[in-house]
Amino acid sequence: MFRRWFASASVYVTAELMGAYIENRPPTKERIVPVATMGATGDALCLRGFHFAADRCLPHPLLRTAAEQVIYAPFSNSCYLTLAKGGIDWTFDDFKRLYARDAAFWSVASYVGYAWVPFHVRYLYVSSASLVWSTWRSTLV
Image (cartoon, rainbow, N blue to C red; front, side, top):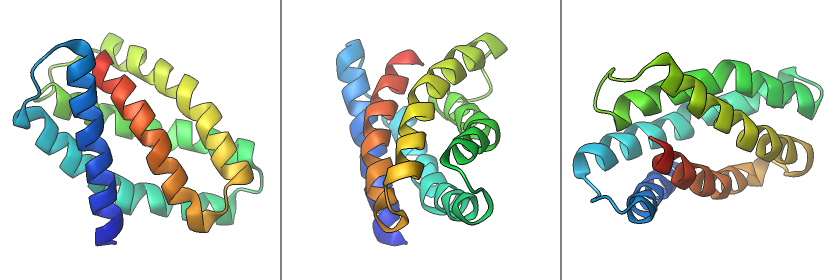
């Protein structure tokens, strides 16, 4: 589990650094440390468990993807906004804007993962997709 946690944390740190570079803003430990810590914890514990349950309980990749967007994504996006903004200093419009982009990206990425990537290597696939998504997301918030 710790290897997964460190791998996820490195993805979040890299994405936040790249997002800061793209946006021409200074990277700050006040943003990077909580995002990487909580993101890695959420990925290593919650998301892995969600994927395991979805594989066991939902028969079709489309249902798994829909469940991820309805159950996991709102929680994940709310946590990210809270951590990236340093508190509950975000509006519902901020959430809608982030969630719409999340749905556009992860609906395709998750369907591909559920349909064609075996469970035992899915974590690597999701981590790779997360690097792309997290870098894009860090430029949005």
